[in-house]
Image (cartoon, rainbow, N blue to C red):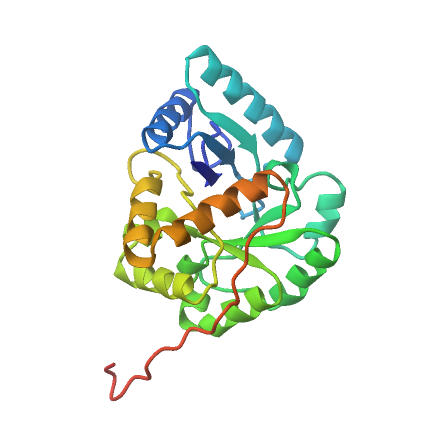
Length: 255
């Protein structure tokens, strides 16, 4: 199993604090059947700046430590980049890191909003041969309240990745319900952990895929698993026709 989104590198952000934490996370990942994990530390989210060269060095170090400790988990380089206007300028200056140096780039929105320039910037990114993947859209307040905005971004070529814990209900029923709406409307293309630790932000990948198989069938599980593999191989991923999310209108404050 491949996990495209994790904070397993020690001391870079709000994920693993020490190499011991990284090793414990690796053991937890292996116990779920994960064999390959992409390290995606935060970049320019207001708290952390993790540039491409620094991330690649940290990935090399963690892989060496895993090998020394007999941990059979491959870590690949990536980055969770908060959206900002000069993103592509930084990409051309080799500060921005795609997933495993592919054409796929993680883009994070602020948790409560979608910047007004997002649609134009995501389109501009695609014109330069990069495919943006919006991470955890199900946890964005504006998209939750206005799902048509997510539909428009996906219709225009952006991809998305939902969090395994959201599928399982670990962030609450409201986020779990929106995650299901996103899946059912073909508005997401990957499931990944966004794991930060083994206490309250664990992987939950096996449970998420079990849930998806039970609700939507084995083909849906294959769709997400195969897409993760295709990203690492820098190949075109599978995309279904996106649909708008339709909700019943409220009547006197009730559904």
